[in-house]
Image (cartoon, rainbow, N blue to C red; front, top):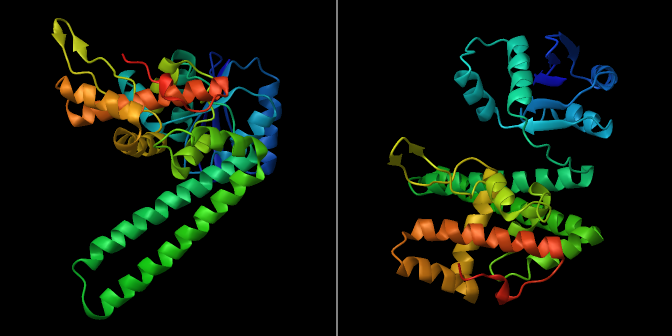
Length: 311
């Protein structure tokens, strides 16, 4: 059985394949408990929900705790799948059926559910990104402001920066309270170019690190080159999809490592010397760094320059 669940604030629409059974429950404690009990009575291979900004969290946590095989997918993937299958109509029930079909045909890999502490860490990281975006937006407005508006913007920026300090302190405390996280962060930060934001993002948002092959982890993050070939045409290889938040911090880590990490700097300079554009070389450094970090976590070994192969 493959199950698709369309999530809204007040309701969960459920569809099952291949039986075509559909029903709905309230998106509250009683409704989620009833849903879990009913799904446990089925021979479920996979349950798929879309990320909906948090409305799915309670249901996902409950199903994960019940041992049900649940995965949360990117809504864009499902929209593209629906277009490809020609299913353009849209209602909550139809969306649930599309998700069930997506589960049956695509069978996305189940991502390990994070603990409550890890979810809190992930939320803090998301809040940190939001504050940084607000600071940048206010700074952009400050360039053209004058008089009382300029004063108000300056005060707001100062307030946001204080909030950022508090969020960073909270992140630091949560990491240090967990011996496992503390050891993992120390391991990751042994790599020149990996700072606290990168290490904490990897801990919270990439729990698969160290458990997958280098090809699988690169594809999961979105730094694996994808083919764009058709017939005799050979298109440019490009990266696409994956976890944007992880990819963003990994890019900044590659920029720093290409200057301050001797092994990565040599790798970057060799690619540039071979005629590769700077951005292409940096993406290659991102992939190399990710591969190294994946190996380090799997083997529980700190950084050493010999970990960087010459190829």
